[in-house]
Image (cartoon, rainbow, N blue to C red):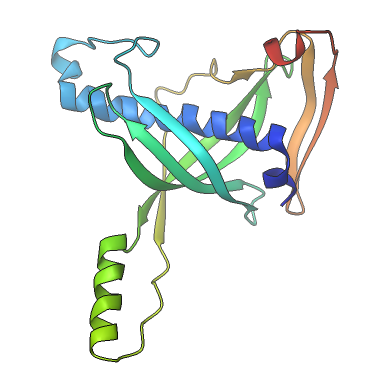
Length: 195
């Protein structure tokens, strides 16, 4: 609750998750475009790059190995003319830093393959049960299976969200089901978090 109620933590976790999910969308688009054979025809900063937004985190929890599990919905657009697809996600990771605490990042992220009952099927079953005056069954819980996002052969340590030159995280970790961190920040007008 503390993480989801904090605007700063929620907004920055959504940014980090969108950055990690963008890697997966990028690799799928590369495969579909034939980039393996012809090379990539776009850059991540170009207008034709995939767009991934995480409008809301629905649940933040911690597992027995002190990893953070983030659940939510994402809006994905593989190119400017493609339709927007809304998809549920579940991401399991640790949180770490680099650059002396200036960059915060998700470490060892694992994305879950989410299998859930489509809304249209749920509405059809409800309609049939109402017609036959049968009790409406409960919606089945989604099924999750985690897989690593990064290839162990292509792991780069240069990723992360820059907190700005005046901000440093001294320590960040998960312990006893809570996210704990120590931070040093210098507040200057117009300079906080790189503004």
